[in-house]
Image (cartoon, rainbow, N blue to C red; front, top):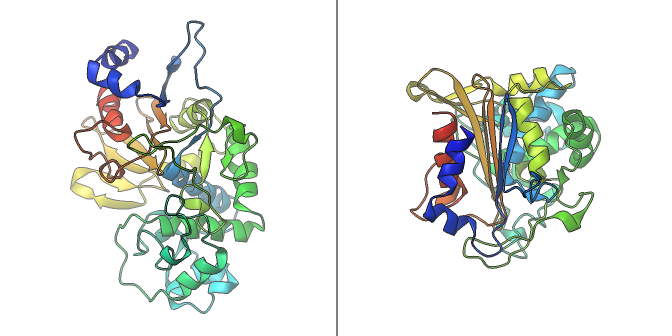
Amino acid sequence: MIQQLEDVLKEERLQQWLTIPEHRLTFGVVTRSGRWIWPSAANGEAEYASDLYEIGSITKTFIGLLLAIGEERGIWSRLDPLAALVPELASSPFAKQTTLLQLVTHTANLPAIPRNLRRTIQDKLNPYAHYSESDLIEAVLSEKPKAKGRHMYSNYSFGLLGWILSKQLGMSLHEAMGELVFRPLGMKDTGLAGHLKDDASLQPVFDAKGKPTPHWQFQQSMAGAGAICSTISDMLAYAEANAGLSSSPVSSALEECHKEHYSIFKKRGIGIGFGWMLYREKNGSATHWHNGGTYGSSSFAAFNRAKGIGLVILSNRGVDLASQLPFIGSRKLNVDRFARILTDKLFG
């Protein structure tokens, strides 16, 4: 299998894309036989092993895990209405009818971003930096009761979910994730933007055209949508835990995240767990995946527990509109198209 991947990497078109100036892409595969990371030096050490990358919306899978951990501990139930958890939302008809489960499965019928987000943007390249908790509360209180939920991908939902869970825990999302998620998984270098151990290790980022662009910043209100930064080493530890290749104190919560909690296209075997998207392979096994993107970074993670394989791709080059659509892209290479090439080899 690794030889197949090495052969793929020799293709001229891929080589041209991977070696674009300032493009520091790294990816790794975990199997029952161990880890394999590209690129690696002659001594076998991964070249970017300790470098931090923005992982964008893969953050949502960690928020789903926090939900599962808290439910196991009896802190909340997935069926709890939002209004019962946060006093500021107690008067909201929308919050009275909407549950944590609807937020984590993108079935709360919320738009992609809060309706009042645009008015808070001071730098269009850093859109979430000034969106406050009071802005989020205002947005939720303005929401009207919804019809029966259907799947609509929403950063708003996960910003709100992360905020509610941290409020219930009585700590910041940074503290909650560190104590309940990152530490049990052994992800020692992973953190939320603005709370990293070593900002100097954060890769400089570039937009889809190669122009330098700012790292995204988040306040507590929307951090759950995409604020996590991590290394390839930490992310491969996460992949190993999800793929069943290692055990951790949160193993049972991870398994709950993998279950299909909403069927998106039943006939095609496509659904969603707690944050993770999933689809059925021809052999009946489930491959779970999520991608991520900021204006200066793009990422992808996937695993198949039946095969005991996981994949992580991290890049310091941003996304265009096409690469933000699941497994769809322009003819120009991007992380999602690269991921499709690799997943076909690994899971197909």
